[in-house]
Image (cartoon, rainbow, N blue to C red; front, side):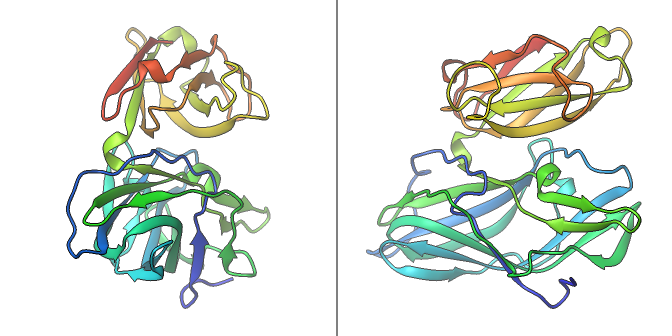
Length: 287
C-alpha cells in the first residue's frame, strides 16, 4: 500500500503510552486557552543493518480536549528522519498551539508520507499501514491543560517495535507506531556500562522493561519499554549505554541479552522510582 498520497491517523490514546503527570510551567495566552508544544524523539533501534533512515512527513496533529472538542495544530512539515533522533535528541513537531483549556484525552498524528531509507538510498516502496488507515488504541490518558498554561510533551517513538518487516522473498514494511508520551521536563535517563566479559560477541541488547506490577521479574503484566543495541568498543573498559525519556514514577527492570528475545545474561537490575528524578540521570553501574 503506497503512502505517498495517503494519510493515516494514529490515535494515541495509548499504544504503549507512558504518561508523566503535571504541566510544564506557565505561558500561553487567552482566558480560556493554553499552549501545547510537542517534540518527537526516538531510541537507537534494532532494525536490519541496511535500513539507515525512516523519513516521516507529518501534516498536522489533532488534539481532543474536554473543553473544546477536536482542534488542529500546525506542525513542522519537513520530513523528519526518526533514526537520527536517538541518544536523547528530539525535534520540534508542534512548536506552539493554542487550544481550549481542559483535559487532553486524545492525540491524532496525521502523516502524509513515510519512507524507508536503505543503505542511504530512499526506496520507492513506501511503508504500509493497516487497511483502515487508522490505528485504534484501547488505553486512556489525560493531560491537564489549564487556562494560560504551557504544556510541553515529547512523543517518544520506538521504531524497533513500530516497523514490522514482512517477507521474504520480497520484504515490505508495515508501520505500527509504538509511542511513549511524556511531559518533557519530567523525563529521566538511565545509563550504565557493559563489561567486556559480558559480551560473547561484538554486540549485546540492553532491554528496558516497565515493571508494572513491581514484582522485579519480567512477566505478562509488564511492558517492554525499549531495546538498545550496544556495540562493544573496548576489550578493557566497559562500553557505555543510556536509555532516554523514561518515567521517573515508573519502576524498571534492566536486562542484557545476546539476542532480542533471549534470556538475560546478567542478573536483572531493578531501578525503582526512588532512584529516578525528573530531568536527571541515574547510573546503574557496570553490568
